[in-house]
Image (cartoon, rainbow, N blue to C red):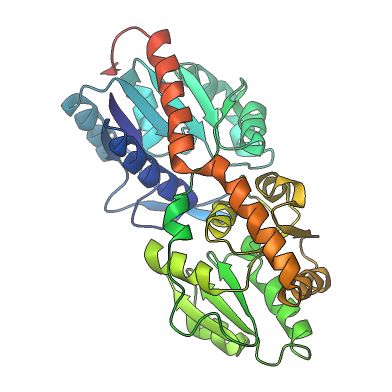
Length: 357
């Protein structure tokens, strides 16, 4: 099958959608399919979106690039990600005809902007043959904003890649290590909550360290908390090794999460998890059976949860085993198979191949 994937955000900028598109492309190629990926390059516009900053590409040049890409390929199916974001996916939806699959990733609460343009978007979205959402929350969000329903296919994870990674030199270390993965300069990722919890833990854990992977001001973070070991933005191999090195992964996010890829990565690595009790995280962690859930925004509760895991070898073992079992549902071969079935539904429901309208 010849498949066109469109990502609305630059692949050079870390993010859940970008990782999903890249890893899906790899999985589909391993299945023997021909895959071409289109994503913004060069100059983009930064727009606040879903508690983060999205880098988008729109305008005549981007439209011309989309037209050329579609014209250069004879796709059996076109797979757009985040088609309501004003970027390449929306442009491709504007000009393409034929079998189109669209995946909705965001779980944004009711947005006045999206509701205001609902009437304009709805006729455009009617061109989509099959809608997909990465979670129940994302499915609900797209239904609220643009109407219609979607089948649920979760984000994927390269399970064996994380399971087989080697710990970093010197890890695991005495005194305990808490892991954090994410853009720690974004308030919704909860780093301030974690740092408050760490201060509460200091009397009982004098040698405790926090191993941080992700974007942000590393120097400022170290000045804020001397227990931080900041690795910065690293490649997937080093991230996997970091997850294999810590005693517990902490995900103290405060909201606006539709899935929780880092939770799936930690479960693959066999790392116990303490996470905020968000709807998305609860679903990934099987209602708390595969990870300890604590009230979001509560450093006292977070400290208590981290203490329970750091001091409880039996609890760590139980959570790690449950996580390994749970994450099998998110393994890329499983997820890619579900995506391929969505493609087959789209191609059987739409005459011909992908073309330019």
